[in-house]
Image (cartoon, rainbow, N blue to C red; front, side, top):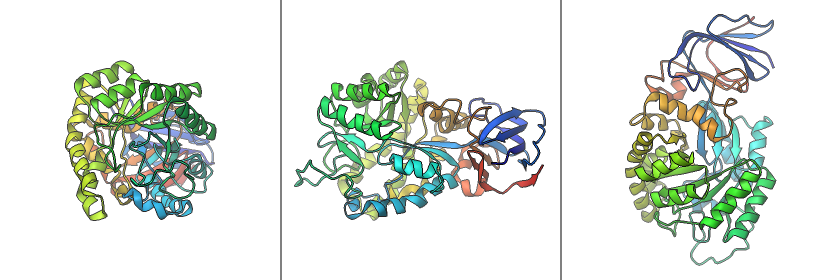
Length: 417
């Protein structure tokens, strides 16, 4: 792989509020070798790119995606073979990289096979961190069986509908299924710890899994150096999950200040996913969501902005997630504009870079522009540290996208040294 020297960027490094104009970044063997405020000498044969004073940032990270969620209405997956599901996921994955997301965390469905297919170059896309299927209790958010279906002996490789979850009722069963996903190479474990929007038989207010069940999942993950993320909505469910040792709380729309303070105390993270509610409320009826699901969706959407303000005021470390299903996935970058209604551009940028890197246990390797980090870089017209909504139009404003030292997109002046 050729070395690359990016010249004259206005650097946002992922952690420092002030931009560093006139910065050069040297990339060698897919990693950042040097970052300098004075001109660097290009190695012989290196590719030189003139950033032209534009903003140079770390590649973006989305910490809540479902790469295999190719249908908004989950029941439509029941007749879909896994091969078709995978084929339909491929353009979704590439489109994420087209938007400047060089890393994504899949929190339900994405497995080691799709992760490794991207890593080995068979599919263009962001580097993937995967948890395999989500853990659900009987009747929980992940249990989408028809009311007349009492089967537990499910072949989870039979279709795309049952691929996304595993039943875990009781501590012993939780231990078995978590150990099995870790055996297969999961980067984290996802649990459904409260009711949800898309599930047909549970209310948002439901608290799911016992304290002992969640603690078993946390214990088993920690033994392998991994962690647990939990789907939760209400303050009570969030407290229940975090008290059990869960590291990242997904959604959290009905959090209150007392619970937000508890999240801070325990060193946990919240990953809001606001764009999925706004976009799905616009189109969900037309795309076939049931009235029951749409009613839940409207309640959750109304609470989203207040949740973000509560977390920000309490000092909760908020990651950046989107959770877009099926036809909604095109709106991924709109999360930046929504976050900008409440948070400062700096806080939003950190959420999508260095904070998400912390969540992924990749501090210093992802989400920053610093020596030793992966050479995941984007160049943006304008200054997103002043107007973060610039990132909501990536096809117009992103002039360069680099992942691991390789160009995915480059519209800048380039020459050989």
